[in-house]
Each structure stands twice: as C-alpha cells, then as structure tokens.
Image (cartoon, rainbow over all chains, first blue to last red; front, side, top):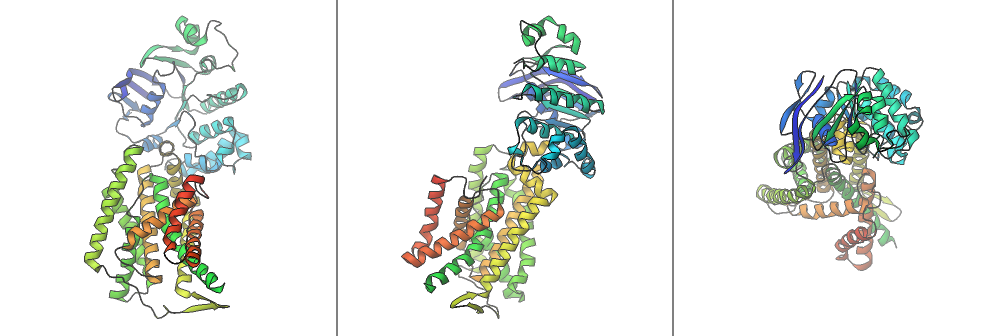
Length: 245
Length: 289
C-alpha cells in the first residue's frame, strides 16, 4: 500500500537519497536498517511530506503523495513518530495525545482512541495531567507513539523509537509495536537495535549511502553476512537490550 | 502619600492596557516567530475605528468594540495573507529580518494613511460619562479607565481560555512549540498562523479602542505602543497570556512610581531600564517558559 519508487532527495548540493525503492504491504512490520547518515530519517520525512523529493514517486493506497501537504498525509492514514519525539513539552500528556487526533478523520473518535492508548501504556493514564517535560524519557516515548496512534493510522512510521532508552523500556516500546501491528496497523520502523528490530519485523531493508543495498525477511537479514558484519558486530548475537550502534 | 497612591492606581489602570496591547504581540511572536513592529499602528488603527464609529454614527465607544474587534480580526487575516504568509516559510534568521522590514514598512504606511485620513491631531471620544469618578477614601478612580482595565482583563482571560480549551487554540499552542511536530499531528499550521495573526490583530483593535476612549489617539501613538508592548513581552516572557497582562500592570505601576518619585520625564525611561535589566538578568522573562 506504500510504494516508494526511485526516490532521490537532498539538501542543497548534498544528495541524501540516490534512488530508493521499497514497499510496505498492509499489516506488515518492515524494518529499515542502516548506518547514521544513510538517509533513513530523510526517507521517512519524504514519505511524511516534511521534505520534498527531487525525483521518483511515493504512492499510498494507489495515490501519489508528491504534492500532498503533511497534515493531509496524516489525514490519509500515515503517522510518523519523529526522531527525538518532538512532543509539545509545555502541554499535558492528555493534550499531547488529543492533538494527535487533530486530523478530521480521527477527531470524532478521539475519546475511544485515548482509552486505547491508555490501555496500551497504563502508566500514561496515571500521568495524564502531567506536563510532558516532567516525564521520563521512556514515558515520553510512549506519549510520542501514543500521539501518532491517536491519528488512527493504517501505517505507523517510527524513527529510532528506542534511542536513548534503558533496555527494559526498549522492549516495552517494541512489544507495544507488535501489539499495535496485531490490531492491523502496518509498521515501518527505523531502528538502531538491529537484532530486536529484525526479530520484530516481517521484512527489512538495508539503506547505505542513500541506496537500498539489501532486503529480505527478518530471519534472512539476520543470517546475511554483510548485515552480521556491519550491524551485529563480531559476536553476531547480542543481548536484546543492547543497542547495536 | 495619597498623591503617590493615586499615581499608582492610575499606573495600574494604564498598565492593564499595556498588558492587553502586549498579549497580541506576544501571541504573534510566540506562534510565528515574527516580530510585528507595526503592532502599535494596528492599535492606533483600532482607536480610529472606534473614533469614526463615535464621531460619524454616534456609537458608544464601548459598544464600538463589537464592530472594531471583528473588523480587526478580518483585517489581520488579510494582512497575514497579503504580507506575512511569505515570511513564515523562510528559515528562522531570514524570517526575523524580513518580518522586521515588512513590519516597519507597514508601520510607515499605516502612519501616513492615518495622517491623511484623520490629520495629525489628537482625537478623543467624549461621552456623557467621561468625567465620572469613583471616590474611594481620598482616591479618585476614573470610571472609564476602570472599565477599560476590566475589559482588558476579561479579554486576556478569554484568550487564555481559548488557547487552553478550543481545538484550534491547542493547535496554535502546539504550532508555537514545534511547528513540524504540529504538522505531523495533522494540524494545518498555515491555518494556525492565520488564526494567531488575526487574534493578535483583533486584540490590537480592542486595545486601540480602549486607549482612545480612556485617553486619546493620534497617528503618532503607534511606535509608543509597539515599544510598550515589546517591553511587556520581554518582561513577562512568552507562553502565558495572564502573565503578559500582569507584566503590563507591573510596567504601568513602575512608570507611575518613577514619575511620582523622580518627576514626569522619568516615566518613559523606567520601561527601557526594565527592558535591559530583564534581558540581562532573566532573559526568559518573569513568567516565560
């Protein structure tokens, strides 16, 4: 349902994406791996409409997204949890979550969606009146995921959701993604914790230097010699909590 | 002693208008990161709107608010689309520079327009209740100014509630905090910008009406009010509209106190001293986040 074809993008003279093609099917979890600077965040920004791409096409449920504004892409069912969470720090947990349902399609059902997010992350229900900047990093990440879910997306994209989190919280977030996916939401996740990401994902892509250099099922990528060498390190198998940066 | 107290009371009364003038500027700056240096001219224009309604149609100046504020909201939206919508697309530095250029140009144009339409003379709106005074002990409180203080406070509270509870009010706050994150939650941030600018202009219109009924209006008051509003925004900090109102009252009282202590000419200096001291000691302001 998401089709990315030969997308090129950059900032000024710097070309970040040099012809990227990939797809995400309904109900799938797809992981995007790659070193820092490979263009992972830029690709997500292109899909979300935050960054314009210079060539190629991105289509969603058969419709071209090139000229669609970011807020209307949300309305069509794609939500992004941006890198660094980007929460509204001065506002309460509940206000942040409710704003997630701002799209006209999601707004009428916001009460139900709110209860679903609180069911997924019970700790947020306890802290609903707290300003977000007073929360721990893990709780903030839960708000960020919850805020994106409030838009009732059919595709949830996440940029490094486990960055900077303690191992216990990393698995809490990744477990939540599996739960969200079981409810029928496709998930497209950029994740530095490669073993955890590949265990979670049905499929994965490897992005290096602005190009896709590998793709396959989670298990196949896990066994791939290049992936093992570049992302899993010499020991190849690490405890799930440790980040493979 | 009672002379000083009387001066301080008058300081509170004008301070409320400083506060109201500053809320509009603070809202626009907080949301769009655009400093509208023509804010005082918008206040001046609002004042002449009320003056015209009173002089030509005999409308009571307080009732004129019901016409001036909606007209100012609309004028603000038009100004945004015509002038400022081009600026907000630029990155931070260019945005501030360009908005200053546009603001100064707009201020000059509106000043010239006002001189042409209404001459450079000072205008006031006489009403049957203009001279009414409320006596409390040996204090004399002008009723009209007291009413302007109450209305200014009421409008500030209304704005605060609007930003706290209205769907688009929350969207405006979200856009002020992080416009890209706001886009990602499905907020049309261009619409949030238009709304913020229109609200800011509407508040300027209200402030201008109140200034004109309680004091007077002339084409030259624009710069003065832009300065007062700017001092209050720096003093109070961004983020809280009631805090901005309180900042306005603080400035009014400080001016009155220094005028009573050191003499009239020092009234204008104290605001600038506050401006510099706050920037050095507490750059985010008294109530700023």
